[in-house]
Length: 420
Image 1 (cartoon, rainbow, N blue to C red):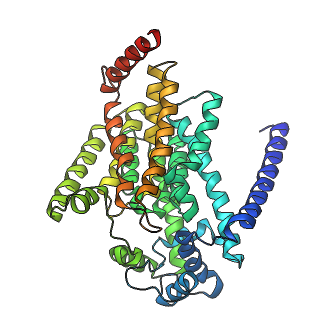
Image 2: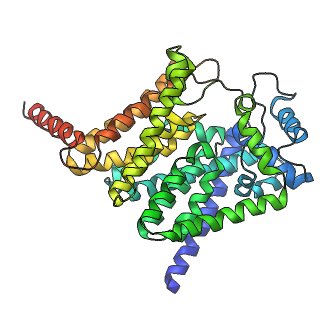
Image 3: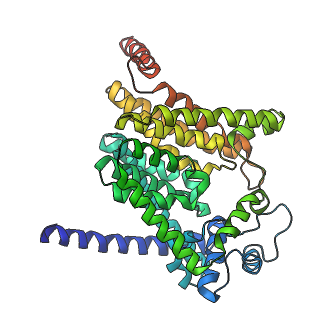
């Protein structure tokens, strides 16, 4: 980097820090100090910071009880979120500097600000990964849409670390694309802080990298995981067994009845036997395994398509999913955007604006129409991933894909309408 480049970088860094501080203060002053919330992050912050404050094990009942009192003003009741530290211990590394701030509303404001920037950067990186290049005015609309879209906004309000997982996933894919394999492996290791979002993605990236003889991805991943896991054992030698116990008890810990999308469809809506749910999960798992096997020698475009399908299928297979996890689906969504923009110029831009508007209004409308008290209902979970699964399968690379036939038909019809 030249001296001029270093100076420019320093100025931009100072401006970013100043903007982040100003936005954090405004968020604290006008939102978090008046409307306390962000319980998802509070449970991680309060339990995790107990280790910094007093050396207390974040997984201990004593630390969890103090977090419950801080959240509810009393111990949690049966059926409520137990506010346990249900993450790997090294999730603490993502926010430990915030342990030195006493006021949680201020901590929440800072975290919301940082996660908003993480979301915006992740959106930009995701577009670069799939080579979607919208015009500037559409970029502006897309960034606003990214913050306001229901799953993303909900993740920001709750303080969900799913936003961080989305950012590191997009960054890892960009590093792979640019040939920076050490960095890709190291960054993707961070995605393990939420295993329910990455339990298919990480094996897929490592599997494909092995068949491509890109062993530096493995080396970067192994080194980063060694540092994260090893550092955690130094802090709390028993953390792994306690974390795994929390996973087995997650339904009790989280106070929720929802599981995978397959469970929601089969058991919640159709009231079918859990055996049917098991068959459905098994079928989706076989599809994921087949995708990994077929895509092992794929080129970059094939790898991206398989990655998008695996990210979508994760929500149908995972023992527990959440709408806040749908930020990961920006990657396959933008992949579809790229296909439409390339195939259908310039009318494709109108279609993409319509899709973004439909997602924004439709998901919020569905939430507001079905909300139960302050809780989202199962109905909110379904339309986006199911629709995206159909679109993604239709956009599979190759000649005469369904997407090609659809866009040709729509383009012809649209041209007829405009002439009429």
